Length: 638
Image 1 (cartoon, one colour):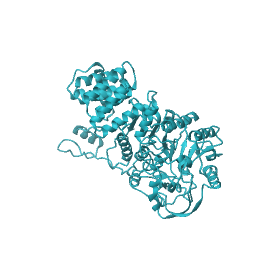
Image 2 (image 1 turned 90 degrees about the horizontal axis):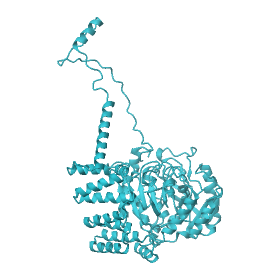
Image 3 (image 1 turned 60 degrees about the vertical axis):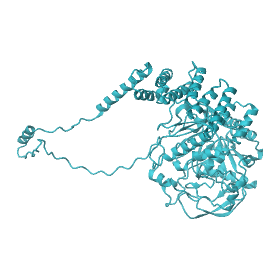
Image 4 (image 1 turned 90 degrees about the vertical axis):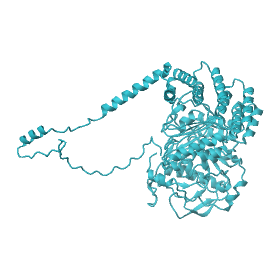
């Protein structure tokens, strides 16, 4: 993401003081983790958009929100608006309504300067006992506020911190406080670095958790609402996938993004989820066999890429996905541009992104977000706990009340068993993984055997059980179950079959069964040639064969080896052709020099060195000023 690297490195460790804290914060433990946020929720819709109010009514019905908590505004229908339009048609009307209904009562206060990068105190008017904790912006309400050049920031504030552009959501989050500067970013008092805290009255006097129910079409928004409510009947189930860039330098400021994603993966794995991490620097391949996705986090391209573009890739009901990019939410109403809209159009229930350049440190910390979700917080709570700044560029898109993990896991499991939920196989697998994580080998084996008895021929159970045995290094049982699962998929050209063959080849390789490993690699290359090449399996197979000293390769692998070698030769030839001649100015012989001297008349011939070469004169070099380090392009991470 475009920015000065040194600036990012310095700000990576910067932590401005939060808005005023007091001893009353210690009373937060009195707030129940699953407090009823519905009673503190308002819905805001745009009367100028014919779809906005019906969507608001749909959401109000789904969450039992009374009609007096629905607010209609007359505002532009465009996604981007000016600062003047935001103030006059959104913020001020909301302030007037909140004040007239007795929701917004402010008193004078002084805050330690909440503008990130400035010191001192700021006089403000701050809400007291604000009853509105959650605000839902319905599709039709503008998304972002453009930069206003008339708003001038202090010279003492570094240039990267001066912008006054923002998402509408993040600006409205500060509705309880009047008098804050319009420039820069405001420190978020609810940001919880490694502390899980439910939202309560103390925080509501400083901010409102604002998210939006928005997307490419009204039908997508209705589906998002429905899926969130349905998922809460048990919990979010499926697989979790993560895509990191494998940045190795510890002092690289971009490594922060990798660390966030890696920590999120560890949290999901500790909670019994089947996870996979793609560690190649580029974005996960289009052909990587990801499916039944409950959660995704990755980076870094401008528009949606990878397996999500294929119809064979499916998100689970209630899925949450996030891709870090400077402009991942430049628009949320397109099925093709950026990430937010396309992800929602593919079935995601909640996501987030940046409407303008945010700088990495000031985007959501995905590990804190995941920690909050897995602890039972709502989407809005987890989202704002992960966001260090307000009045900035992030938009959170999804039902703010959505709790993907609404109860203790075992309570969810009991609920699924009672209702005979179709999610039950996933939950039972999660229980078995939790036993395996705890090191209970005997109990794990008993749980897996019971699973196989209770769900015979169930592909999810068979593959998941094989995964558990593989992770326990029980290779024989893992191999047997992978092979049995493949038997059920025989003749089916599916993403499941590709994934299973890849897993089976890997376990054969680890078990020193070179013949079976090569046979399985060959099967993948034959059945899924494009996918095998794209995910690097062909190269892995050739490396394995070379390491095993195998020269007689099966047909598909042999053909691929020839293809690779031909490409290498072509690349070498092209590189050689592109190189300039080794000696652009060949040395002049002594005879040539003498002839040239005679022709020039009075010119004195240069002296000859012992080697026979001449000490030719060279023109003076013109000094050049060092080039400034170019900023990363928009296809590079911030």
